[in-house]
Image 1 (cartoon, rainbow, N blue to C red):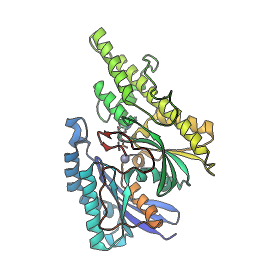
Image 2 (tube, protein in one colour):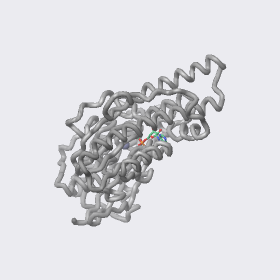
Image 3 (cartoon, rainbow, N blue to C red):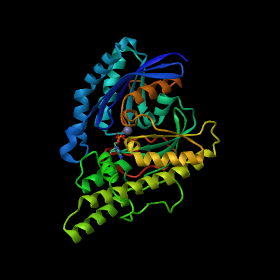
Length: 363
Ligand code: KG4
Ligand code: ZN
């Protein structure tokens, strides 16, 4: 395998990111990774505002690319290719990235590779650990929730996913309902650590149905009802009420994810993989209870459990550069006709996902 150095560009949601990744043989090294979050810009609106996100990407993306190249100590002429997220995501942001990448590719003559953002997440365990295909991937973030079998760099099989909210979205809404700060996941986790998960009987949606599909919006409604009942009864929430609500909610999400993971592993096991592995990606994979429960399922099933470091679990451009390298190695090339796509399912044969999350299309 020839050595390759790629620039990666990511702007599909609310992180403006650029990175430089070098692949030497089968190993990879992240030479630079710059991620500029936009949390402060959207804070007043309770969610990502697409127009604000797009403008911030357009203003900051070239500076991030410059910073990443400087961090790597490289110039454009040292690169072998440019990889850019071409979807799915908020279209204004994706367009900013694709246009910058096209400009750079046409000015330098470097190959251009459009990358599916979800493939970026899904291929991360190969960047960090050289994981062999086929592996099972659980993608759990603010905008996504799905089980994928990664067969190769460009073949992914979707086993199931959320039919409504993504778990991160449910954590964020829960935090909002309880007056906790955004992003909700870490705040809910911190409260839950001091709470009693058994006090409230929250549902375990879709566990009674076969398959790997999940649902999280009913859970949020159950939490809202429990909150309102307490307020009606006591005139407000005590500190302990809030902790117990968080603990009950978190445990319900974790149990649903663990049980659905067990089912997904059964389907995956039928492939008889030589080195069976489950990898997780997305911000929700940072949750310690969810991680621990998934790991327990894997240990029981005799499957390796892999969680990349958090900075590579959440949105970043190193995963895009790496996915670009993998696609380039398998012969993919894009031209100036590369389009930015708001929707781009990884597995075109799977049933389409329903709706669109607050952070854009779900798949
Ligand atoms: O992958 P990510 O950074 O962005 C996308 O959604 O693409 O994920 C962010 C999501 C947020 O919804 C956040 O609340 C959630 O991940 N999150 C967590 C935790 N840390 C972040 N959810 C549960 N527990 C956590 N510790
Ligand atoms: Zn993402």
